[in-house]
Length: 69
Image 1 (cartoon, rainbow, N blue to C red):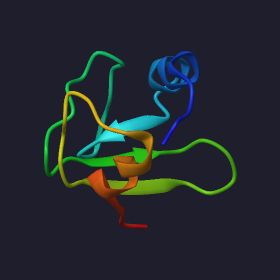
Image 2 (image 1 turned 180 degrees about the horizontal axis):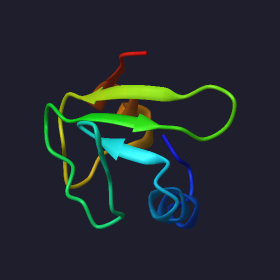
Image 3 (image 1 turned 120 degrees about the vertical axis):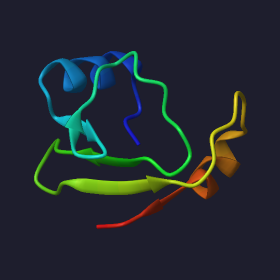
Image 4 (image 1 turned 90 degrees about the vertical axis):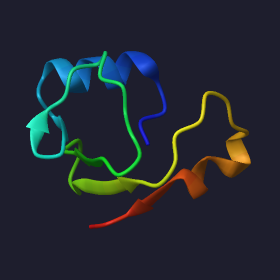
């Protein structure tokens, strides 16, 4: 969703990322069923986590979440 880890860390520090309605820290362990909101850029993104895996292929990553809004 956010392509670079440093950008994701900065977004969390600036409270532009929330999980289940609460501000997220970069160290948060995402769980199945979590709703993540990202408020970067002109269009906010809200997704629901469908599955969490330790490793996955880039092609399969989109199947691990669904866009809610």
